[in-house]
Length: 352
Image (cartoon, rainbow, N blue to C red; front, side, top):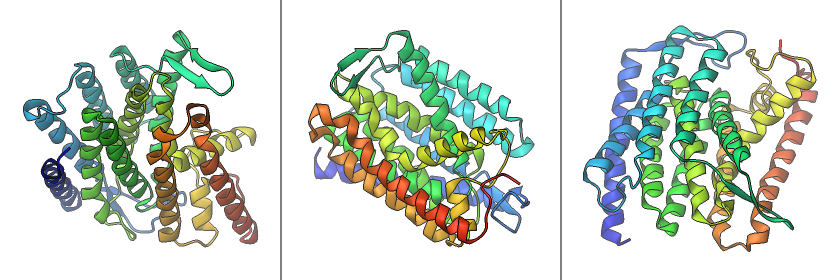
């Protein structure tokens, strides 16, 4: 890619970020208020639904790409269906921000959208296992792909409970993945990441602590779904489809926190879908770490994971699956620190 082309792409992204910011300002002017309660971190009614800016910027970017771009036009109509499914998730999530649906309604919408993606051909067909080799997954690959898309969508959604945490992580993720797409000359993947990142960049300044607006489910579920689908698309970067690990690697901090919290709550006999304030990041804040520090720590995790992702393609094939180990050690260290601070503060890990 030439320097001039890159500049044009960055200017286009800046325009989409401005559009996102404009939509966010409108949501602040005509707010859907999120009222505080004992399970929420904020203490004043705050607008939510700022994710409309992210959705709007991405949809406009994809429309322009589809109608005018020659270097990264949608080679397969499968992505049209997937993007429409993502928009459907955004609409259901916006209604949820207004009406507060039961979790089963949101789960059904996410599962239907995941089935659209799988039905469009976005499936991880094989996986490389160290010392075993490439294993064909067959129908299990379809099941695992649906599970991944739904799990990633919910992980991003569950972690969106602190100013700028999800926004910061996903912005770093989109920038790194756009660079990876450029390196791989996967131009639609590159353009999708650039466009999504532009939407997040327009929203994030309004979400920095203390937040003027929250992303809401309309933003977090949309982000989680699109990033999950891009993870499946990234599997095409190599024949063994190990590159599927790129998106889980970039989102590892969010996925670890969500997975640990769900498993811990199930082990303790709690209803895992019930509201609570016992995610690791929430316990860190309740244990005395300021919100900017906790959100900044997660952005730092994403930067570290991004450094690993940028070197991923140059790693020996047998070592690529082990790329998850360094961030896993980081997350265990973070969990240890948070648990120590929570114990000092006399906090219980049980919901209450």
